[in-house]
Image 1 (cartoon, rainbow over the protein chains, first blue to last red):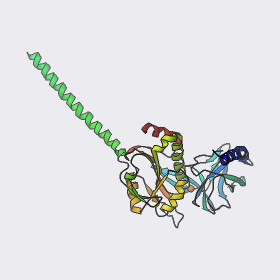
Image 2: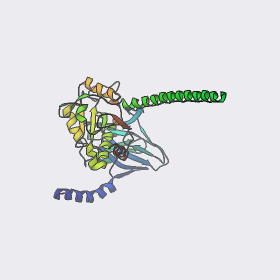
Image 3: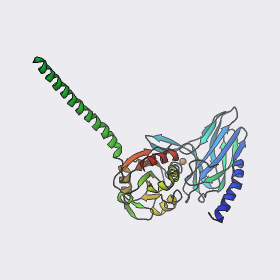
Image 4: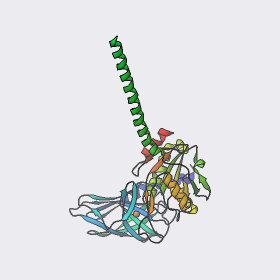
Length: 153
Length: 198
Ligand SMILES: [Cu+2]
C-alpha cells in the first residue's frame, strides 16, 4: 500500500457512487441499467452487456446499436449445441411489456466490431441503442476489467 | 447321510451362484470404470508454443493442477467470461491458488500468434499461460481433450468467428483429468471444486 494506492482508493470511493447513480437511463417506458463492456489489450471484437426493463404495456424490440468507437455494432446471441458455443447474429432482441431483456455473458450481447482503439478499464463510451418503439437512446457504457463476468456496478 | 450330500450340493450351488455374482459384479464394475475412464481419457501429451514463443509439452506443467480452456483471442463473449471465471476462482483460493496453473489453448492459431497471446493472457491473470502452435499441434491437443472447434461456416476475411466447446478442464499434477466445468460455472463453484483436489 503506497500513496498512489490510497489516492486510487479515495478516487474510487468518491466516484463509484456517482457512476452508479448515473448509470441508469430512461427513455419512455424503458429503463436501461448498467451498460458495460470488458477491457481488451488489443482491438479485438468486444461484447457489450446491458439490462433493459420495459415498464410499459407495449412490447418493444432492440433492433440495432451504433457507437463512434466501433465500425459496426451487431446484436448477437449464443446457441449451445452439444456443448459447443455458436455465436450468431440476431435481427432483434425482444423487450416484452412489463418484462426485460438481459444482455449478459453467454447470452445476448452487443458485438462491438472494428474497435478504433482498445477498451481500457474505467473508460466510458457512448452507444446509441435503437428500439422499434422507443427510438434511439444514447447510453454510456463503462469498461470493466478484462476478466469481468458481471458488472461491478 | 443323504442330508449331508444335499447340504453339500446346496453349498456347491450357493458357491457357484456367488462366483457368478462376483463375475457379474466385476463385469458391471468394469463397464462403469470403463465409462469413468472415458472421462479419464481426457487429456494427454501435447506439444504447443507458449506466449513467449517457447515450445512446451505436458511435461512442463507437471507438479501443479491445471485449469485448461480452449478458446481464442477474437472471442468477445464466451472466452473472456471463462477466463474471468478461472482468474476469479484462483483469486478466491488466495495462496493455495498458486498450486494451480491456468492455461488458455488457442483454437485459432492462424491469428493467435505467441505475440498476440502475450498481451491477451496478461490482461486476465499474471500467471495465465497462453498456448498456440501449428494447426496440427493445436488439432492434436484439442483431440486429446476432446475439445471441438471449427471456423464458422461462411466466414470470410479476417473477421471470422470460431465455434468451439466451452468447457474448463481441471487436471491433476500429473496431467490426469479430474473434472470439468460448464460455461455457467461461477468462480465460487470452480474454487470449491479445486479446493477438494488440492
Ligand atoms: Cu458476438
